[in-house]
Image (spheres, helix red, strand yellow):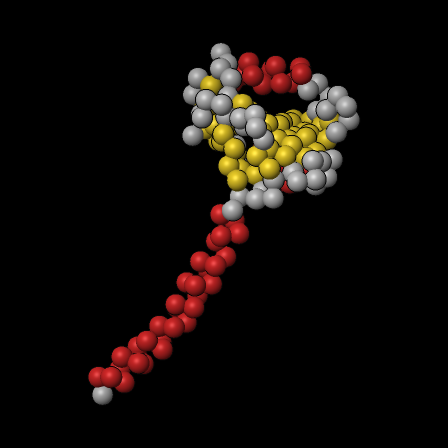
Length: 151
């Protein structure tokens, strides 16, 4: 009788075991994304697994070489100064996010390629990233830059 109870308990737990196994199997696809880090190690971002991490710290590009990202972590006197400077440098771009800790713009580079530019306050430094792309979408670029953060 005790043997039957053990089997019954094992069988009743099997749906839970199956669900855990299924969820665990789904994790590696996302876990294969690649992390890029700024030269000083203070900021990072995540790029798709198919992208190639560049030899220059904080850079990566798509396998088809039609999209790239670069991140940096400069010192700034204030986040407001950074935002003012970004508006001047990217004068034709549209501001899509502007808060006390995040700033994002979308538009085109000087050579006409679409880009998304983002800055995140990180203490006395900033985390800055830009995705320039010919393939993919603005949402793809936003997704990459949404992972930009201070470490």
